[in-house]
Amino acid sequence: MSSNVTIKHDAQPTLRGSSTPTALVDYCLNRIEEWDGQIRAWAYVDAQGARAAAAQLDQELARGNSRGPLHGMPIGVKDIVAVEGMPTRAGSPLTSPSPATRDAPAIQRLRAAGAIILGKTITTEWACFDPPPTRNPWNLAHTPGGSSSGSAAAVAMEMCVAAVGSQTGGSIIRPGSYCGVYSCKPTYGEIPLEDVIPLSPPLDHLGAFARTVRELHPVIMSMMGEEAIEPTTDFKSRPAPRLGVVEDFFLVEADAAVAGATRTAIERLSAAGAHIRTVALPKSFSDVHSAHRTIMVYQAARYHQKQFTSHPDQYGPCVSEVLREGARVSDDVYRAALVHKQHFQSELVGTLSDVDALLVPATPAPAPGIATTGDLKFNSPWTYSGLPVVSLPVELDGTGMPIAIQLIGQSRGDRDLFSVAAWCEELLPFRAVPPAL
Image 1 (tube, rainbow, N blue to C red):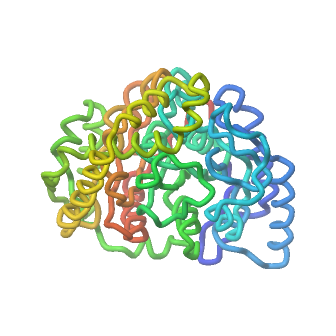
Image 2: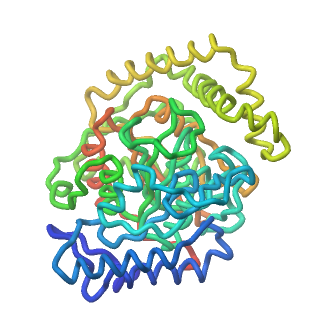
């Protein structure tokens, strides 16, 4: 955000200078008005409600009361999450236009921490694989990724300070990487999924996007139900981390630009004192992608079975393929995939035992064209395992598209992972913005 409307982060968070929640909301609404005709990040914008919330938070600040680092922060919410007074459409004509009567618990927590909900961001249909109308802010001919398309694009274009997304395969980390913003998928189960339209409950996660690790951290902590403490002091005091680099699969499957950017990032972190070691993937990794797909399609088919049978013509081609595939998966095959999932999770405990985080590319390549939402194979293993992930943009490729790395932490080690991510961000600052900005 521009300097007169950004949030200051210090021991006692306030808005910078004469800036107010109202000024910040107006800034974001102006961005939406100026750019969303091209980017198409928003399904619903509640300008009146956002300004009313900002006015109330202005008054609290005037009385000397700050709720913390989220006080007055405008946030977008992926349109599968219930927000009181706004419809939840999930990118489908089969959903009701009637407004939700209550906030999902994750949104209740954000509001309590001082966040302002600007509106609902566009999702791919049913949070699945059909390409969205949203465009990548770095190049309109490229996908922003999916399924949290609007959330990532809105943050990249400064239409909000942060945005809520969800991930069942790679739907947070991939759009974050493609759109050049920071993103987090926390440990499975750490953020409640009540009042969130499911795709596959054993795999579904809520998470978020922001423009820095320090803005992302309190959003995630609040959604997890923890105090949104200003993290700067703790981050700066941490020792150099132990980072495990996975050479097999990830750096082998990455294209030249992504592999090169990842190796450059590793070299810079190592030169600054990070303890780098090569880590081997567990043997069970070979079946991760097929087992993840089995669980995802099986659950999706059963959630949509009745409606898909009645209205097959109202589903897009990609989600239809998922539902038909899932209907063919037997209960025995599904249960075997769940057993494999538990085995892989247990093996990863040993993989991570001597490091603070794994470091791998966030995607195999920069954002492709708009006919796809991109390849999730670098993301689905960590969704499948439920481990926390933070992605950091690190550079642009030769065509000006962002490239990111992802850090994978230990289960329920989300706060420690953010400490590692912030340490890395200091050494790998990403200052580029989309050409339109």
